[in-house]
Length: 199
Image 1: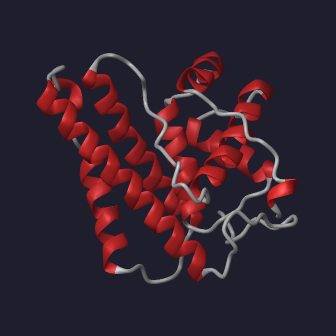
Image 2: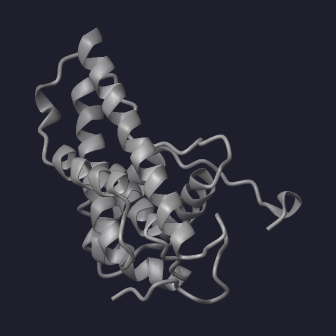
């Protein structure tokens, strides 16, 4: 796709997802859902819109995804792919913007949990470089952390920023590695194909 034909992607905020998820009765928060989407994409899979509906309904533990939530999810898929492939490395995990450090830390843990689940659903079959394998292992450890005890002080704010930046760069590196290995042009969409088969 040439730069001239690229469509501007509307940025989805945390609350843009939180409200329709709650209204639909979903059991997953915005950060975990964004992590899931990013994990699928990072693995090199490009599900069709109907496949995304099924996968996200399963992940949210819903029988079906309501139209407003589905629209937000499809926008988030487009946004995530655009961010992953942006030459300025604009990709960021979608986290709470709460003033409470504990809440932001907890959403980072949930994002990692979602990413790992999505990466498994994406079914990357290659062998990862040691740096990417290590990043996945570290994400698994971060996903198990309990951030509720974090307090709003400068040192813990710095620590959270460092962990968030590590996760961000780890996800970017995994995306680049897996999508390059699959011979996929960054940002290229399949014409009707779902990438690796999702079950």
